[in-house]
Length: 368
Image 1 (cartoon, rainbow, N blue to C red):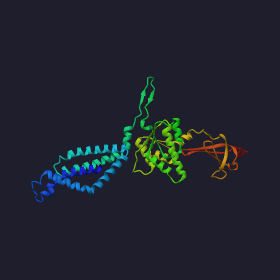
Image 2: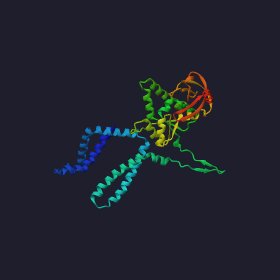
Image 3: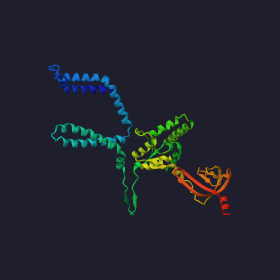
């Protein structure tokens, strides 16, 4: 069907050019002033035949170009197309207004060449500005200025959070981790869950890996997504767009968060830092897990079981029920035993929490 449409277009263009150009290029220079030949109908037919013959050579390239352009437009995010077209329209309007002023100059080159150049250059610049500045334009249009309303008793009511902030974009690591499903089930994560298509592609690639461990991790991630989508009462959206100019999935997530003005949900420490640097809001479930752990203060006592040696000399390692590591000074001699330790300090980061302690008997010996 596409080939037929292109051939019809070639016939129309050829017939039109035949009417206007064949008399100037062929008939007049060769003094072919025959009434049968030198008329609009004959030149239109001749031009259409010439262009139709050219389609047998050129149609393959034209079809490939149209299909490439169609695929590029389909895969491009709607926001990219919208703001690129908006910038193009503004550039063409500016070119038209400037061209109207230029045509008043009675110089042939200004009347003909300059308006064409202005249209091409300003149209291109307008498209590029609209395309590259789309993130800032989205933030400009979606920004909901904080406002307050006075109630009857004089109290101020805060304005509602913008709807776009309810987009929670999941990355691959948090899906494989699995805890995100339980968090959604409890209702602590509100709004709309957004799962990008490129994240699904990465999960499928991991699930098809020849490595058994990676394959199990990928399948676990897909099972978690099925659970979120079917068993948990929360809205889930698959984002079909992609950013072909960006290779890494993490960079695509940051870009998508800027486009949607959403929040990235992850447990990847490095992605957390990248989002902070890019000014993208991020929810790290490791931070949530650390926040709900029991608070341990220096000086408190706890009963632990020494499991293994530590990295430093005479150190021992123990664990709490929630998996928190306890580094016990001079605990190597108590491996395999349950002992009471005194907390000396606590180190808390987005990667986890670590408790430093010493045996209670060790403190008494020091006092003696």
